[in-house]
Image 1 (cartoon, one colour):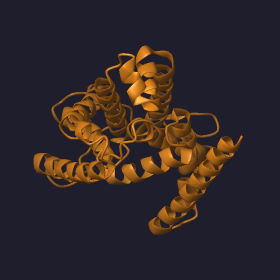
Image 2 (tube, rainbow, N blue to C red):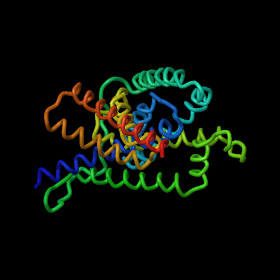
Image 3 (cartoon, one colour):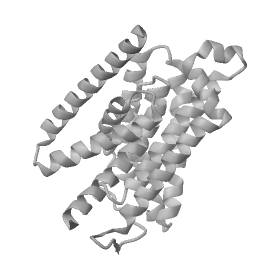
Length: 286
């Protein structure tokens, strides 16, 4: 029982991390149709923000508050300088954001140096959950992630800004016709997605190896989450995170190598895309 509950909580921790990273990508890729290969670097920037604040004598919580701000600043600059000029050129967007990701990685390396950076969690101990004991910080991470998901769902579905986003996504020309500033809406949405990724980086920093290249792994898994969960679906991000986290934990427990893990995840994506296409075709026929 102890092993089972611990395994489930570990899976829930991974689900929370993947869900947060995937949420930001779900906005830029799933809703805005922007393939941003620099999204993983927003996670990295958030993690380094926490490290920097702690290295200057600040608390973890102050660093965590700075993480989404750092992600938002980088995302806002990227959208203003590059992305907004390439919305109608998807291939150019891929190449440009790939170049930005390399620049950000090298910039962080030049600024902070080589080697992993230590980030201390705010709580070191464990909590007794009757059937098992579990690190307290991981439970905090799960709670913050779930609250963030709820907040994003409410923002998209219950606010005027969320209505603007959904309107622009469904028909940009019509949105402009009714007076919605589509350029500003896209900029805010992209910056918001970057902020969520920055928050994810700040939360995962005490559990991960904080390196300039750490965002690469999270980028791949974020695309897995968004595609498996359904492109453009916020709820699908939660489902995709659940599927990928359970699959990842199961493959790790089975001792499957990293290469085979990616091959199996790729096959899962192919099946998910095929099922989604079949669903769309069936809906068109009816």
